[in-house]
Image (cartoon, rainbow, N blue to C red; front, side, top):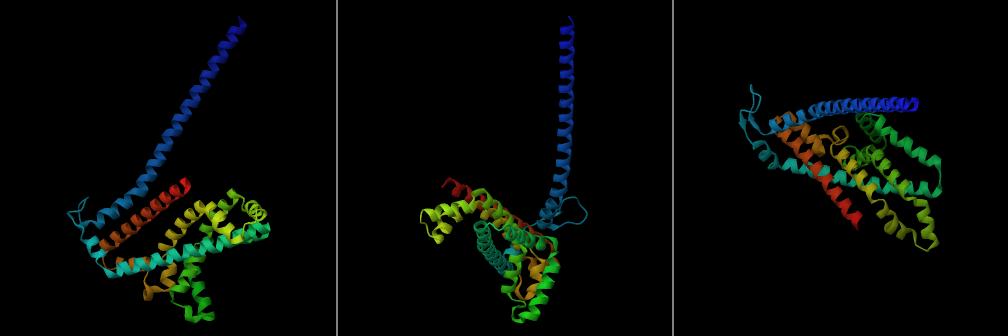
Length: 287
């Protein structure tokens, strides 16, 4: 009899515990939905406002635009300066991605083969500097240094490309570092040397295909960061060689509708780039 009572009490306690866990889980779900909803509202409303403003012909005292128009997009796409600035930013971003991939891959391969922890610590320390310091400080220090050492580079796209490569250095380093850790590059290199594979063949046929995911992830972050960087472009090249963000800053003072259309265009291009890279990554993975 006592055993039955004890078992009954134990079962009741377990039911109470399950009920408490269920209630706690329900409260956590409700809190999660509330926080997520507020965050979405906080992030989506400004985007919706920009979209509405870009397609409005007249919008003064009403909740929605009084007149709808796509003239801002038409004028923007017919503007030759828009395409020129877009081409310049695309070229700079593409070259920065290539530079960072080549330099960081070579540096990490050297660290893996040498097994030097000090070199890895040095790379990680260097990668903190562009993140810790504001872009304006980096741009001013770059202009000051090269103004004294190499004045011919001031205001040139070459200086902008090298500066952007330094600024985007951490994003590529973190992506490729994780990729190197996942493939054990040192063991792969030793195995290839044992089999008589030349170093250049190891890099092209084994290392690069193994790092493709890290390169794609880092490439997307570096490209978008470089394409949307205003401080470096404004202080290094300015209006003498207008990039996308410099032209956008000038356009904001002239026509807000066209500026909004330009912001949405760059956002759409970013999403398209991410989608293309993701699709390419899936194809490479299947192959």
